[in-house]
Amino acid sequence: MVDLYNVETYNADTGFKVGYLNELERMLEKVLPYAMLKSKPNLESRIRTLKKDWVIVYDMLNGKDNSGLGWDEHRQMVVVEDAVWNSYISMDVSATQSQPSKPNQDGSTFSKKKKKYF
Image 1 (cartoon, rainbow, N blue to C red):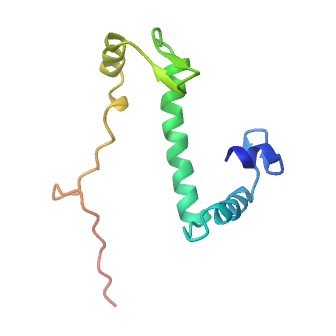
Image 2 (cartoon, one colour; image 1 turned 180 degrees about the vertical axis):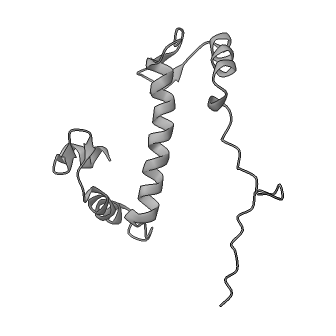
């Protein structure tokens, strides 16, 4: 992604221009020839995940009540004292838990497809 951004061909004001996923797919094919990664759904899904994870880190460092949270440039990671971290996660439950699946009417969380009768 950084290499693609540095080339500046697909840069836009708010991200990347249309077609950047296809170029990213070609770039990955050169580095990982047998990975068979496709822009849809593989890369699109991974980019969505990265955006979601980045928002969490960004909010930690730039959001309100972020006193005591910092960025260690040398280690490239968020640094925080244990007491501050425990206080942070008690305020933001999403920092420690994934969202639960919504249960079906019978209480299960499995996906059910309805049968079609013709």
